[in-house]
Length: 94
Image 1 (tube, rainbow, N blue to C red):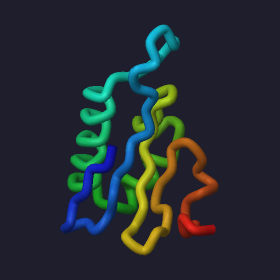
Image 2 (spheres, rainbow, N blue to C red):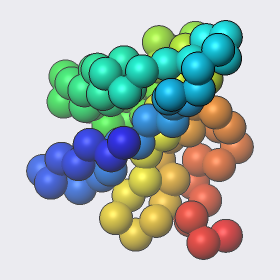
Image 3 (cartoon, rainbow, N blue to C red):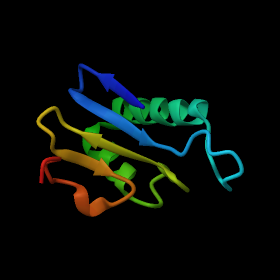
């Protein structure tokens, strides 16, 4: 579920398991949307550098079970990845 902020020129994406009835820890679309909105607010208040670092850290407040934040620049460069921080700096076509 993308949330785009043209001023920042990034796309914030949230990965979530939705609609898997009976799966322990399954999340709702509303939870994913709130998580993405919280991330956009964090970028605006803390700045991109701090926010992206927080998104990529397990203890940064943006990794919650199967729900985590990742962000790409318009050129495809990964700016943050809560699921796999080693992706940061890579271009999505790599």
